[in-house]
Image (cartoon, rainbow, N blue to C red; front, side):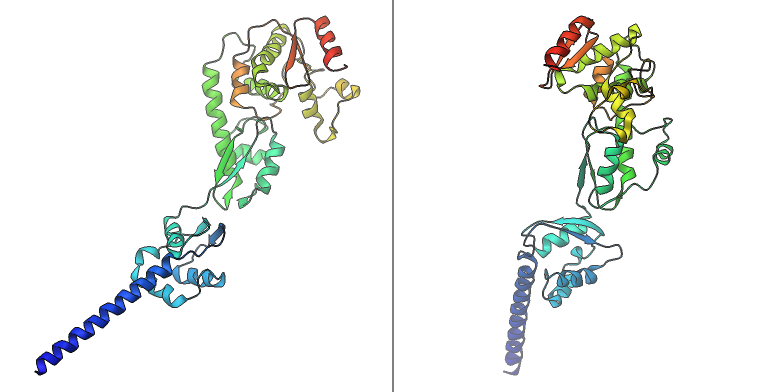
Length: 331
């Protein structure tokens, strides 16, 4: 009889224990799976943080309201406590399990920064130094060129314009390195496949010409014809006479219009006054502009003028060009 009472007591105890364990398990599941994030947000885990400190931070932001169960989760779900530092994007409706899972993977949020073709290094620098969570460039242009191992005097034209991704606190120099490497790869490939007998001696000269084409082409279908105009002029020893180079040479003194005295001033970039190409690119050219520089259309065009709708009118003679200027520019 005594044995039966002991057995019954043990069975009751085990039943209660199982019931308590079941209730605790359900409590933990609810604790982990209920939505905690009202709207998508960025959350930074600082270097040196651990599971306990994370709980305190989440409590401070009212994401967690009971640290007792937070400690229990740490004991029962040890695979969730190995959090990694970084900046993460927590999606609206995320639960604690979602949060801990992403913090354990180390899959930091990827920010992005976009550079449009035809922009200058000065414009790139402004974008980089104002980009969210990106460490601004703290080196001079010459120091950056030295870091890249580049033999040139300016970064203009050497960086490929596109969208680049980065994680929080990445150095802006790393994006410049990516853009530089990408531009070099494209230039090497296109230079090896260039048309024969071009009046371009080096890949760098191709970059210079491509940057001019980029600034002059408002209509993509005109690129090869614009390239043919400049190539024909280079072949014949005719000055390029292109306004974007003059504007680039004017720097901060350019106020939206080019005056006659600006065209008469002999600067390194005034192609109305110098022969051949300017000393450096004047912008960051796209792959399409590089292709056009190395594969110009076959033409006898020596002039072109904007028609005002993005397209250009091409002429073979100065007389025809002057008529086009009267029609499209002087109206």
